[in-house]
Length: 325
Image 1 (tube, rainbow, N blue to C red):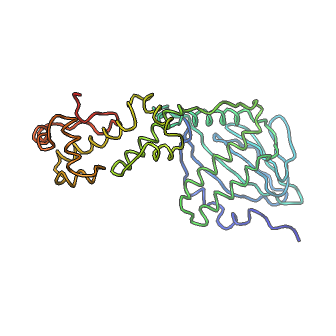
Image 2: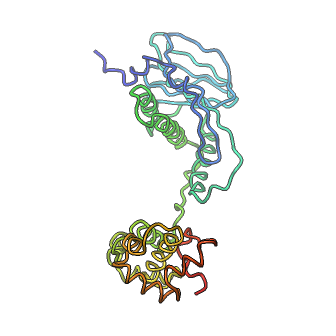
Image 3: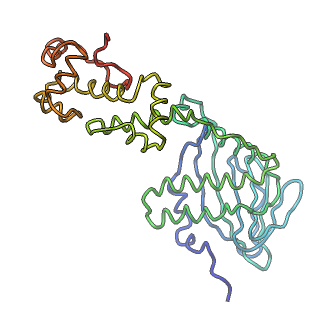
């Protein structure tokens, strides 16, 4: 008795993914999945010479046959794949005695206009997608071994639909990209490696520290506690704050608290004692002292002066609540 067929599940509803009309963007390309299914050829079945305007990937999970191009004919068997299209004339034929199964991916790949997306890190993704498509275009026109197990991702995509997995659409999209990436590694192009885009580590640490302050400023925060969250030493974090133009950790924290308090006072969110406790001060008296020292006026006077005007922006973490310091 032969071993179970790994892709038997995909025979239940062969066109399930085809019906989903999967479309997505990867890098600077748009992708539309026309077909992603398992099909079977009975012994001796011939698909006469034809071509497609889209990319068509053929993976053989079981059986054998031949693939013919204008320049010649090649045997194909289990564990191999080949790419036809766009515009590649080809003919497929199953073995005269044995059936042949084929995992087929028809996908339209369209270059898109580039937009301003680098702020979200897509420049790296764009390079990867471009390198992948270039490598696919350079694949040899003959059957190749599926060395990187691309065909297993067909089953991943189908299971996402079949099992009703949360995020099935995203899983299918990721599976399609994996098929493309793993197939492209068999390209005639030399492998291209490059350093991932680096980040300014101190700027990154500063952003992590300030975000933690923004999220927890109403609690008693210390330099040591925030530094441990990154994690670095308190001395390192203090140096980073100065490098980033924030004077010091304690100055930044106090400025941010006072900025939030100024908004709370002008908006009338409660008595000064309540505002003090809600924004990290031990008491209303201590807030009154700090406020008078910083702004040269009481919270009540501040409200009277600013309630009819525009508040200082709270979106800039370096903004000073006084504004004219």
